[in-house]
Image 1 (cartoon, one colour):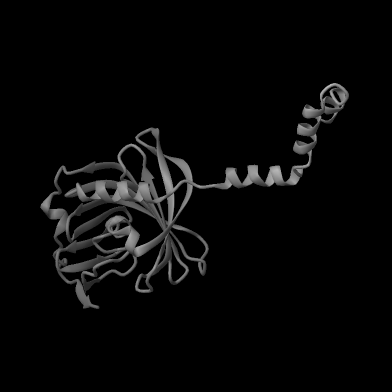
Image 2 (cartoon, helix red, strand yellow):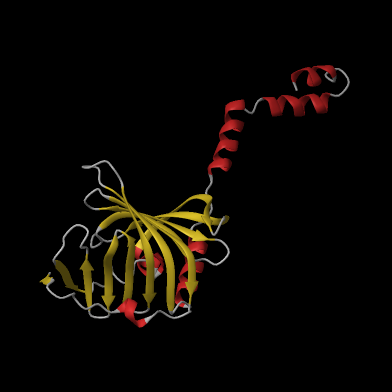
Length: 241
């Protein structure tokens, strides 16, 4: 640019003044403007609004899940998997295939935690909370009234494998506005095609991190009744909390 301006200096004073004016804009300022524009993130709220609207149309949902729990005190992640079921408003189930036999069931009144793989001979029973990472609103708690309950930040565009192919998603970070949640932040992965939440990353108040990835999602296809009820096996002690 400098050599071009010098070549027309004698023949075109107007062009010369234009070039000098342009050259007086610091290069660092131009660079800063470019970086600033490049760093602007998309607005997360249209994505969350669409996810909220999509969730309102879901009466039942089932999906294969992989759950990864990382405890900083232990170090080695614990990976479990199985099939998840949900029927609004207050029924939820996770039937584990690994470890086989473990179950989490919200039957509309109680939340049952039955994990013979780690605590054989007992089942923990508690009243269903309105919200909670293991309660009936595992998905809904992040997309029901999100504007009132969270601050949100767009993280990135990404993809998740599902059925052998990649599915485009938007990744959104949520921080609760209140202090009544058992987690300090959550990151949700929202499908661009259907606006369904397909992955949740949770940082719990204890510092433990929990990731739940959903695949082969089916919506509004009903849920077998046996998946949403729980009867303690013979000889199993019920511990109320």
